[in-house]
Length: 80
Image 1 (cartoon, rainbow, N blue to C red):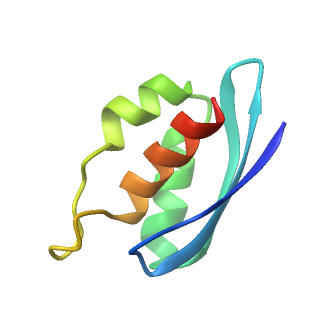
Image 2 (cartoon, helix red, strand yellow):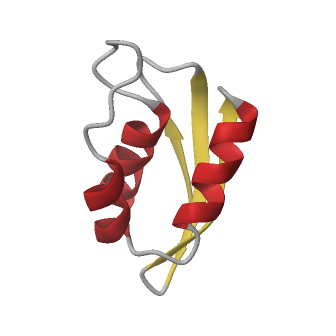
């Protein structure tokens, strides 16, 4: 199933992804640091929402209290 998540407090504005049989696929960020977010997308490919949440939840970018990675953790938790 396809999901879209509007981010809060980050340079990226949206995260689109799929969850198929409990596995996260095709993560795409809109905006943000392109190279870093391509890397994050590739690194989480094939993981479960729980694995992604345990890896990325709580990462803080420049004192914002969140980050694009943290927002991805929130998105997959909400969707999965």
